[in-house]
Image 1 (cartoon, rainbow, N blue to C red):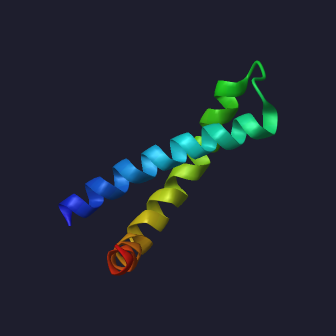
Image 2 (cartoon, rainbow, N blue to C red):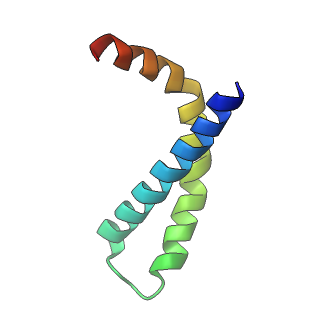
Image 3 (cartoon, rainbow, N blue to C red):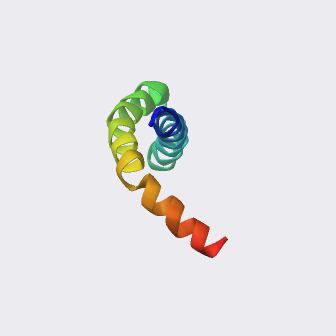
Length: 68
């Protein structure tokens, strides 16, 4: 369980960070308050990403193992 929580934290942090940055950039471009807006988007995205990763991670991993 400890490894699962650590992986969920790291993966959701990484994905939500990159994705919120990318989508903020696509929607706004490099506006003067880009980093503030990105931070806000990240703060909203990370809890959702962590929950989804925790709940669906094992299922997705089993699915991926079938096709690997």
